[in-house]
Amino acid sequence: MLIFRKPIQGVERPQMPADIVIVGGGPAGMACALRLSQLIDQHNAVHADSPFSKESIYVLEKAREIGQHCLSGALLDPRSMRELLPGFEKEAPLDAQVTKEAVYFLTGKSKVKFPITPPPLRDHGNYVISLNRFVQWLGSKVEEAGITIFTGFAGSELLFDGDRVTGVRTDDKGVNKEGHQKSNFEPGYDINAKIVILAEGPRGSLTKQLVSKFDLAKDSNPQTYGVGVKELWEVPSGRIGPGEVIYTMGWPLTTKEYGGGWIYGGKDNIVSLGFVTGLDYRDPRLDPQRVLQEFKKHPFVAKLLEGGKMIRYGAKALPYGGWWAIPPIAGNGWMILGDSAGFLNSARLKGIHLAIKSGMLAAETAFEALKKDDSSAATLAGFQKNVESSWIKDELWKVRNMHQGFEHGFYAGMFHTALQMVTGGRGLRNRYPAIAGYQHMRKLADLPVDGGNEAHLLGPAKGDGRLTFDKLTDLYHSGTRHEEDQPSHLIIHDTNICNTRCVKEFGNPCQNFCPANVYEMVDDPTQPNGKRISLNPSNCVHCKTCDIADPYQIITWVPPEGGGGPNYDGM
Image 1 (cartoon, one colour):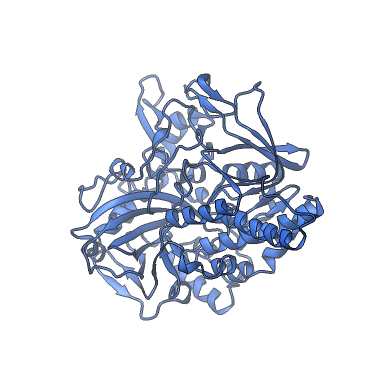
Image 2 (spheres, one colour):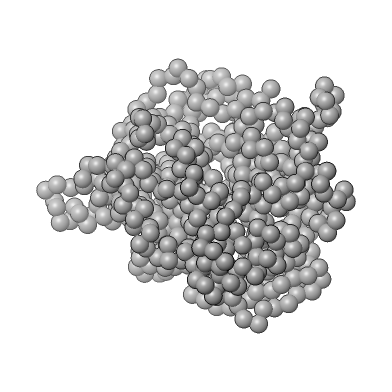
């Protein structure tokens, strides 16, 4: 029997009033908090007789430490940081400035270098960073500014009064696997806030609640996603210089899948490499972690890594849907930022700078609302207007149809991309339609038994322990840790579907698309097909792929007991 994490009912909860609560301590949330602090300081310097306090502004971060769950490629376009903190380069933890880039098309054994780097992938002046260390540094700035960050506190549900968001309930702590209170039980807080700002990253659980309750996505394209699977390597000196960036297209993917690889040279001979696989592939047996392992087998990549050592691992979903997939981002008492809203440029594979800018614009809107003592939808709509008149829209508008152009494969996608580049993002029409990624997945009966051209991408990677690794070996290097005696934070709403329909129709793709070996089908003679679903939630790296890619849409990811998850130190 599966018991899932949900707030204990009938418990008296501590009440905490707040002006603003920011859920999520990534780049968007930290930028929002820091900009709010700046605006309050500017106001108080001029209006000493009517100052604003920072004591009722809180940031909730589900990780045990700031930055611990932050994972990205990561390249930083410094545009928004230069607006937020002019001169930030002098003190921020930046590994290297990009001085060289290249794009390759890979076949099984060879490579072809693009004679000209496509404009979206030109990175001169950007920075190779560890997002983990960068967000730690941003968090220290927020705390120095006098704003409180609560680490180890996850938002479990939104609080509502009619059509208004009135706050956030944090997770209960000290609940056992059976859903009963342990001796160390602590009920979650009800933080009653004038404004709730959601900066949870991709497929945020509270954002998902909000979008569902108010049907916010009804006029948008469905959000589509990729999953980036990443390893950090220490390689022999001279293999790749600090600030050298390599992108790849093609192999190991076929023309039917969307995605590509990256290799970034950092300082001290550290290389960040990974592969993003679009979560709109057809074959349910495809395994994104295996895709990365196959990528490393290519002679070009293998030669770069030869004699090196893999030191860290992680995975993260990325919102690919573009401008047309962004829902309304402000309403009665709420705003949505960063990846939670879908602010990512899929042509550039970059979203950190957009997340930071969205946080700044949300802070400016929130501050105006505080001055008016009015957090109604009419006032917070200023955030939507500010975004649409900012360079966020300028950048995303030019690639508004980028991912949709690949709905029918690689070659069609390249045609549409070229057409969009010469028409300012329009292509054949102003708005390309899209369908949710999981709807592309085909049943096993409609696919070749041997996998055909995609056979090398299907099923788990075995790994040789030197260049390639199985999931559990990779997972060990993610530093993932959860409290074992707690309800599962992965909710399967109907396990009968897993045990009866999915096992026959799709072969239980959760075993494949999860990069952390959370889902397993184990022998059970009492089940019609001799198998039943079994979960290892303590393995979860919080990538949300299961919530996104499940063909029946019966899996929901919610935050575990605050603090649990991966430890992306240095990534």
